Structures are given as structure tokens and as C-alpha cells.
Length: 169
Image 1 (cartoon, rainbow, N blue to C red):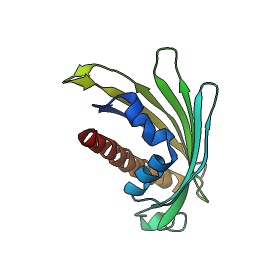
Image 2 (spheres, rainbow, N blue to C red):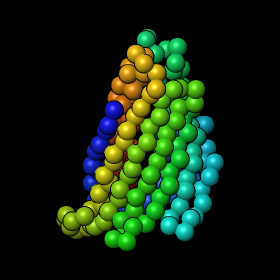
Image 3 (cartoon, rainbow, N blue to C red):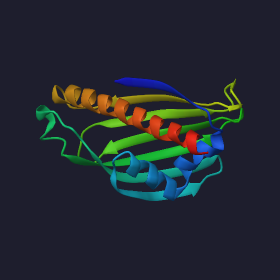
């Protein structure tokens, strides 16, 4: 399953980037989105940008068909490789796994700024592209659909959380 979304923010890239690159703000963001036991395992600079690896327990409103595969809370491992581009934009290649669940999500975030001028400030655009896969027949399709729907909700919740920051900055 492929998912894509475009999120525009009335904030500069540096302000948004803090919530993807600073440990305390990463934890704050995920906790605000309902995660527990948020841990930043790795946060380091690379020659092209930075790498972030996080673990968090997220609630799951699981359909009965998937209860044997998913629990009420699931541990997510997310690895993000961020790299600055020649045009000044920032691309994140990411992978997400759910511990003990036979599915994987991979994708990219592409932040560019200023996309255009709106009102008094720059607009930062985040173009999101995700692919969710499972190698299990039958149940795997249901699993991918559930993870896809849940991912859409999480993307929207994160978008709203970050947009709220516009009101306080």
C-alpha cells in the first residue's frame, strides 16, 4: 500500500526541524501523540545530515481479525536518515517496523522552504511518501490496510501538533 500527503506549515524549516532532530522535542512530540516509553536510541550527525533512531509504544485500536498479531500497545522502531540536498531542501529516508509484526513501512519525507510566501512568512512544505508491505498472504493484506489507516491518522495528528506550534512561535 502506498500513502502520500503534502503538509504546508507557516513556519521556517529550522523551527520544524527541531521536532525531528532534538531529543527532548522528539520525545515531547511522540508523547503528545499518545506514545509511551519513548526512547531516542540514536541521534548523530552524518556528513550529509543526521540519523535518528527511536522506539515508542503506541496504542492500537485493533480489529478482532488482527488481535493475534497486534496488541493493545505495539513497540515501534523508526529509523530516519536525514540528508541536506543541493537545493537547500532536506530529505528523510525512513523505515518503520512494529516489533513482532510481519509488516514494514518505508518512505521519504521531503522538506523544502520557503515553498512560497503566504502572509508574513515562509511556508515549509513536507511531501510524504510511504509504502507499507507484508509478506504474509491473506492476513497480511488486512494488516497492511490497518497499518495504512493508522498511519494516515498518525500523519494527520503529527501535522496538527506541528501546526499548533505556529500559534506559539
